[in-house]
Image (cartoon, rainbow, N blue to C red; front, side, top):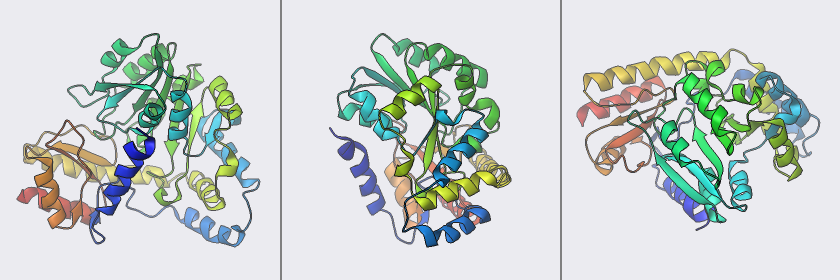
Length: 347
């Protein structure tokens, strides 16, 4: 079964089912515009889009490397998660990941012969690191983790996660997607880039689509251990010429603004707290999310709940089996959150 069928086609179908006028709380987008400097950089660069990207691409890599505290040759630009899944999947072996989860990498690996090993979340809806460890063997090619996890928003204990990565990286390639880590309580202490700096064979994926408010530009990057980065680049992954001029200047401007993400973190954290207070008052089980979404158990079938929200013009995320009574809702603007909370109260 191809990646096209297993992921992209269902995703396209999901988008087609969205109400044009619905309040969009299903895609974990940042509800706020990107930083003013980002918007200005895009406007300024519009006059140059007839030209291919130039030195700005290398300047972006330099800026990313400085932010991450690594060498420039450890940065690979672009959204390469699915590409990497295909590349590693062709080599065969087993690919471990948590379910329910974000399946792009493992679906890609499976489409070309990789064997996917699914590990359920633990009772706290976190990556079950102990169970994952028990699945690692001589056939394991890669382990894919999302931290904070999607759809639960949970993070693993910092030291436990760090130690797990250090041990597991000796046995397989570890991929950690940190798309939502900017929303967590301790970005610097939780990032797996710390393990990379200590010599572990890990690849950390980041995106400008979430906290930086640039979902429409589709630009991301990864930080990799030196040997892995060289290997991937030698195979043609992460070519800077695959980026476009607008994404490059926007990402550079986003990194230059040191106040935007911290302020967003405060705003989202405050709104998340309101959600948690409501869920507690309604006695609804929920995770300890540290992302820009909340995940909770309504006690009712997903289809019934989704229909109720849709009837009031609120689009929530898809079902994440086997949690058939749980729903994920993106934290939007205060007015959007208030409306969604009113719908929940009436259920």
